[in-house]
Image 1 (tube, rainbow, N blue to C red):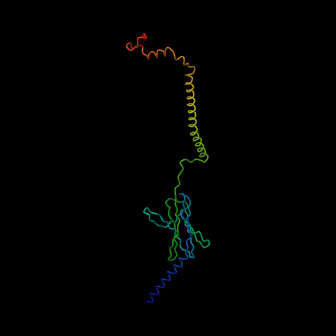
Image 2: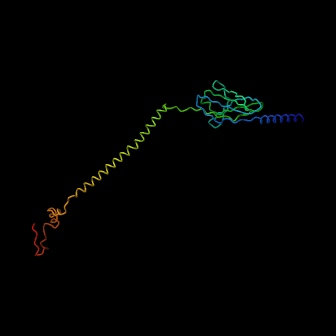
Image 3: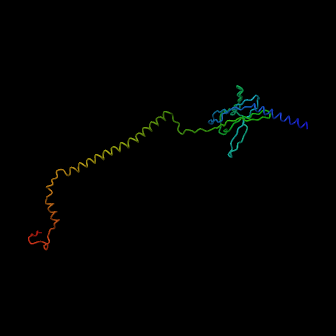
Length: 227
């Protein structure tokens, strides 16, 4: 009975001590996102406040296709180097330097802090390595400015030339209409109405009356018209 009580007290003492140590650990804010072009240098860091000196291990979390996260240890190499940054005002920081970032190094990087039975992870930084788009035509700024100026001139010509042609066409049509009106007025100039009683008009009247008269319907005192 007494032996079991001693074991229970020791267990609770260890748990209380661990909680005290864990409460003393305070994680600092990390840079949540960092984007860098391929083959460029990148630096990821983690910071914390703790009186202890824990072991620091860098963890890389890669998101799989089905939405899960696959953690793995970061392998040190000439391209990837973890470096302690020392302590400033009680804040301890560690950095992970990528001298030449590669596309397969995209992921969430966290520091795993281990001291005794305590294991804690920092908030982490998501590093995105992208491949920049390559220019199809490598043009200088002066050439670009010249192209923009030429485009402006062509646009101005496309607006002015059709408008000028429409104005000229409208002016020509107006001149033709005025000329046609003057010609119609000249047709009737100098026309004498007395000349309408010409032999032609007399023949037209005789045709309307008919070349012959009906003998049966004529009176005796009316002289027949000769054919």
